[in-house]
Length: 563
Image (cartoon, rainbow, N blue to C red; front, side):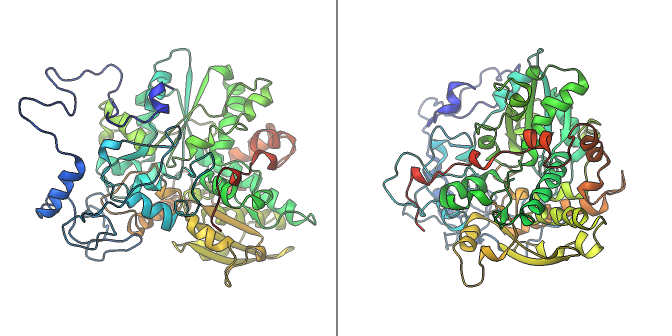
């Protein structure tokens, strides 16, 4: 990674020019002045636009819209423009005008691997402060002065809320261009469930359009040697996580409830604010964290490729995945091969970064034909597809846990387990499993809701549950910090159709006929029969697909949390 990726560049715009492309003749750098021209700051310009009543002409509605609000007058119907009619910051309860007072902004560590800020774009509107405090429970939830770290879970919600794109994901496209242009590397992509229903919005398609085939075709056009589906990794996660849950429930004294561990922002939040719950985190890796080491072991062996020559790239809706890949323990493949210097994942880019790369190469995305994933490590179940929605991990886990206990596939009422669906921040349910009894579960999205749940209100006592799913981003990965930004504030009117698209993949996928549960995935069965000898949570699976409780660390020592 180049030096500029580790330091803030307060007065320069990132260069998004693809390798080999040239600047138009006679063009001046952005911000260059000619003659008596004067450059206004973005804050001054936007304030002027608001005062002059021009906000609507610029694409901003004069109506203020709060997070989570649905505007009936502007429904997101097929054919509507992406993201609706525009917005002004939610706390400005005024028409077409910006207040004089400065609202402030969140602190960002210049070394942060997940997000960065372009200072010259910041208008100090305070949107990042609002979402970080009210919806993610980070800023404002620690004491000052800090000890030796700036608290941040890398969720990237501040980037989604930022109206000027001053806050963005840390740009790793230059690193990826270098890899794609290196003839000595075999570059493999894996794509998360939620990228396929978000990417099209960057090219003017209606919200939540499923562009799975075009996304694969675009990756091949960019130069990737192999394109795999993270949904397959999600199926592995369920096989391991459901097995681990049942093992804990059958061993007296185990840490119950078990909390999911596939969301890196939630894991870091737990390490920061609730380190006493670390033993309750599942040791199972995330879908990305499972598929990546399998690429450098099983896939490399099957294809006859030197694992050291594989560049493993993850296309994610999540900025925090950039942090996850850097965790010291994320080298299971290297340890398994006796070469610990080999990392499981080499590069992570977000949905937005992928869109920029497609545009830089002038690929006509809308007219691309559909391309299939490579036929190794890409077959998936509907349960893998719904990993991107709040409640999806829980629903998929229940399907397979039911099968592991009873030896029979669950009935339709459990395959479509409606109590864990929807956009409520905290959901609770119970399911009766023959031979086990009542399994009590909870589903949480948004870390502010996790705080409410864990702080033990009269309604929720986490000790009363067996299994708890937590996703840091409201609505789940479909609204992750690396997903396309909409003209609305991030709201349920955008989250809901994206969630609906993933549920449609789960239940309606015609070709091949939908397999709803991960234990039914034929390729998963073959993998466990031929490679993961000993089955889920067996010796080989634990070496490649799990971490250990000691890999999680107490981060509360770096700051003083308000509890």
